[in-house]
Length: 123
Image 1 (cartoon, helix red, strand yellow):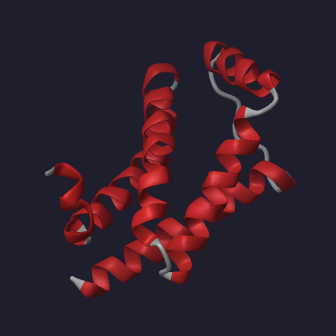
Image 2 (cartoon, rainbow, N blue to C red):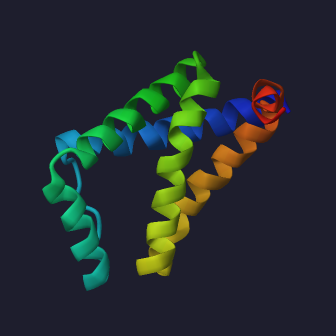
């Protein structure tokens, strides 16, 4: 179980860190989605504060996963963002939901392997 935790944490941390930093440095442009998705994401972009906050949270979560410091906190702050990424893709572009779904599964595995850290939240 320890190896699964480490490998999953590394893959998720690298991916989340990469996409968070891409939000600031624009290394690559994501593929164009359906018009409704583009309009929705553009409205979030025009608000001016949504994507900088999301990208900062992605970077902080990615660093916490990669350094194995405050992993539980990183997973907690990452959960609503990952859920929204998956739901937005499912609502607007189900074909594009694969990567978000994979990251979501990785996150679920980490929640399972670290359940002792999260169980007090549900008592």
